[in-house]
Length: 457
Image (spheres, rainbow, N blue to C red):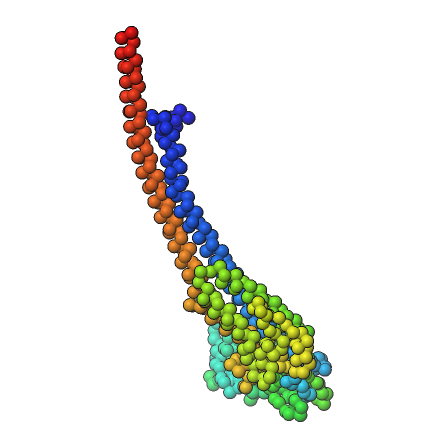
């Protein structure tokens, strides 16, 4: 404590020059730091508001896109007999776009062949090459010293890339080799022993002179849709009914199955309301970001793009092709509102056209260009805004640049004010020393004068 007092400014003169330096430094520094800090805080508020607006925009587009992609807004397939076939929805299905009667005459099958019983699956079966032909494509199967066994043959077939699966099953007295090809009549296969191979391999050949037995022949699925005959290599049918994937479960010749679709009207109405609510939240975020940002032109551009969604043509329907056609309108505050009476009326008149705004058809005549749907249109606005040199990207870069500039200004102010305080300390330290010297001289003179005065008396 004593050392601190002795070394402080003002010790020699008696003036509190240390506090004087502190006050002068603060008077110089604090207004400058306060101004930059205020600007930095305001800028951070703008950055946060912009980040919220971007998050809302991305979340809005992603959630709507997810609802379209996962089928929430799609019509749901209906099947009168689920034991014969089942149906799942794909993009493009609409309740009014398909209704038909289907008859499954035959299921698609894969060819299978099996060998006789082999006592020891690890025992030698013969060496040489065999040719496995599937749908006209031949693969060479080689049995040599390292794989001369039933296990070795099965592995060679499975790794040949022919599409035939080889399995070994236990049977009374040993094991059998079972071969199974892809489904469909065109995928029937043969396995022949090549010239020069060990004749014992013929026990595992199928075809002319082969020792394997046909378990099941390859066949196509045979079915009719409204009397029109179709044949497919698999039991999963994706290319017949628009927007539906059908899975054939059993053959039922002569037994008709009605297939169609039901429309999720309640979900569509809810989605319209949800769209309006989330849009208004996004609009509020953008307004906050624009009002607090020094660079508002880009955000105003984004707001105009979003506002344009209401009147944008997003389907090829003649009269119901915009959100404004189904009762969505803009209020004087720039937010959205829904006329539920108008929405109900349009749904009653043409529910398919309303569904197409959210779940656009996809076929040869309905493309992303002719029928983008609201999700695709919103994605385009989002991608434009957050992309390189987009509205949000430009404002974000501007705010980040200002943040860095203010940080640099604050650093320079601190450096200058530190130097200024050092100069004050030096100046007032010199002043303190001079005052101390003057004070010592004053004391000496006072003593001398008092001495002289006493001597005279």
